[in-house]
Length: 235
Length: 144
Image (cartoon, rainbow over all chains, first blue to last red; front, side, top):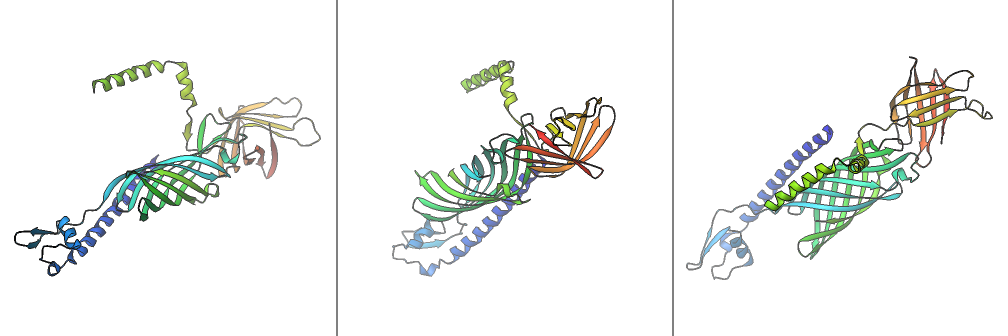
């Protein structure tokens, strides 16, 4: 429990640092873009170019139609699209030669096309250790908490392509046949899970993604949980 | 708001009544618990046959994983079975194979610490338990 708490705390600090860095980068990029608009280029014939309309919309200059006068004011940084995100996944992965079924819930912050979130994952094994005899283990579950980074790499109309990487602390829980309804933690460590998905924007509100991932326990290495999987995500 | 409050109080009172039912306790017992420690693999009956042609065992150990007690018996005539409690530590734990030290605390005060090797398969379950004392191995087989 102590380790779990420590992991969350460190993840939160990392998340905040990344957001600050990202916000600083975007602010400087905005100022550079704004300075490229030269007042000498502005036409005074009453017909505004697309760039001028954009500048007006973003309050980077004001326009007096009676005097045909443009005034450049203070240029505020471009608004970052920072939004709260939460997703639910349903996923299945081939582990011990049989499909295991589970789900994930994540909660985080999206900055433009980048999403950083904390997630909790759970996977149920229908065949513990790949066996249904129950002679050694009669139950197996996997839980995981961690940090997820995702980028919307490409967008075309309603469709989008997303790339991401999850890194977290996983636990393998096994119920021995003689244990009194108790799961014992056998393996645990750092899990790495790159993923890719294709999303479809439904009704302009929901993004339904279909993707695949590869998970591998990084440290300590445990081959038993190296697996390919597929997921369906609703965002 | 009033209805919400009424509903909450009603549910609370209903739950209080339900906690007195045996059925609820049965359901609660079904909820598994989670333990961060490694599982106890010492369970069931293990027998050692000095001569495979023998019909009876030479040594016999039965482990109770819940109480962590054991019964030890030999085929020697006139020797009564001995009971006691056991303790174990793992040096290396793989899911189907582990080793470490097993200490048998007999009720008569004798204490013996063995080095052990536990072997099993996910499909067949436990297969063998090798106990090492003074450099000598005794291989016990799991009895179903």
